Length: 219
Image (cartoon, rainbow, N blue to C red; front, side):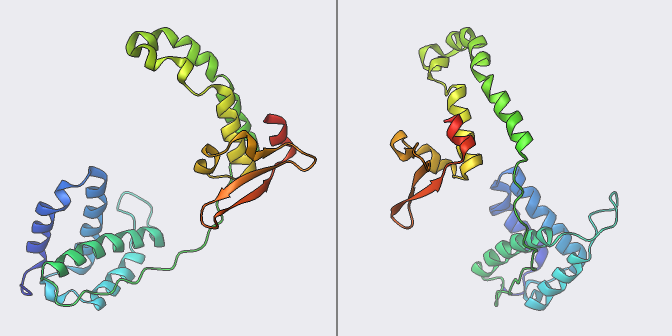
């Protein structure tokens, strides 16, 4: 089994596993396979060692995005994505007995980036569009009733006020969507120091989140 070629393993992997995956998954795997074959020319499975993987990682990090694009180095995230897909393939090869020793896959370090918040003016435009939701639903009421009956009635759809409140709490208080959906009016404290009581699943207790004056006014 150890003398099996890369081409033989790839053909079997495609037939038994990859060809049964969604198109987007197949495309990502095929990109990693193509880059690996172009840069390392793999022959037999037993020659695929950690040294080969490190060689691929180094070459891929200096690789270009393609002949039709500007010649610039790939981002570490793209290289790591290729490495993860190859690692999944190699684990299958090891499980099938084609790889005596599973190579190590050490990913490139990626720079830490601060998440970018939605600018306040953009958020206000979103709320303005959401505020018109009731009018849009009303215009579609006859269409919904004709297609889906009572179960499709706009009266059972979340109204504009609900969406404004949901998005405002998410944006201004920083709550996750599941935390917002679990909120009750009793969790909102409209006192001198308004705050929101949020259940912390990991800690097993309620925690308070300050409510800004803008959020206070909208709720």
